[in-house]
Length: 246
Image (cartoon, rainbow, N blue to C red; front, side, top):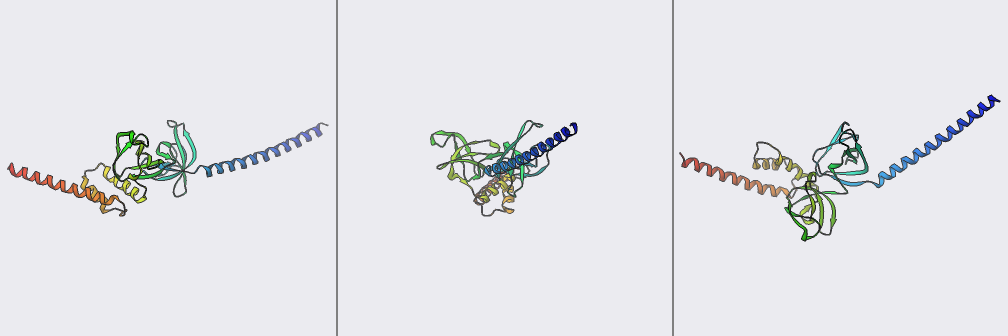
């Protein structure tokens, strides 16, 4: 009897184990389907508002850097986030790059549900899409922004590193990729801390320009021309001063 009972118990255990394996397999398949469906529903166009931010293969600061994102670069937010408890509880967002790789970036570097643009002229900033809400703030030409919302002829924006946000008139923007790329390229040179003066920097930008069709080329040519004229006038004044004091 003990032998039969042991056999029965063994058979019962095997049957229960088999059912458990089937249930777990079914649940795993179901879970995979849900994740895939969620990913399909969570493809959110987003914009990087931090230049040269590190892109990692895992949502932790210690993970290897596989690339970086540039200011104004478009990515797809996949709807997943994670917290790195080992470093200031940094929140990471999972994204898909333009080359189809998936990666993780700090949440502060993104504006989700947005598209990139660049200012073509200086404009005032408003609190809301209403002319009566004007502020004493403004945005300048060639500043790259993330457009988060549109309302008639207004857009809600976030500037680099979210230093500014608010509403501006949409006709002050260019969504042209070449204009955005030129602004990034020129901005890096103009803002670099070097011994070169403004005229020299502009000459360098125009000489090695990869975006000749940008609307900003003529703008920089005009600024460069005025800057060279200013330098010439200063040199004339300096020479006259030296001559009069000889």
